[in-house]
Length: 58
Image (cartoon, rainbow, N blue to C red; front, side, top):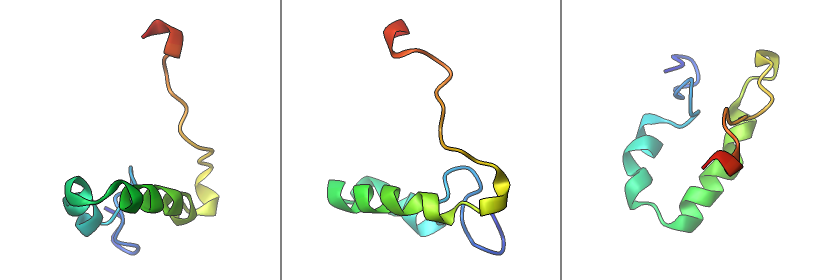
């Protein structure tokens, strides 16, 4: 957890958001997911999720 921002350093959600995820509606989940990129510090160099596998491999 990022002590200053109170977000998980990996998924960028708060503890409350993580705890409520399973009971959130699809709209609430989608809204939260849209907000997450804005929580990533600009200086982190993060450029988005890149899967380490090919969809064709599944």
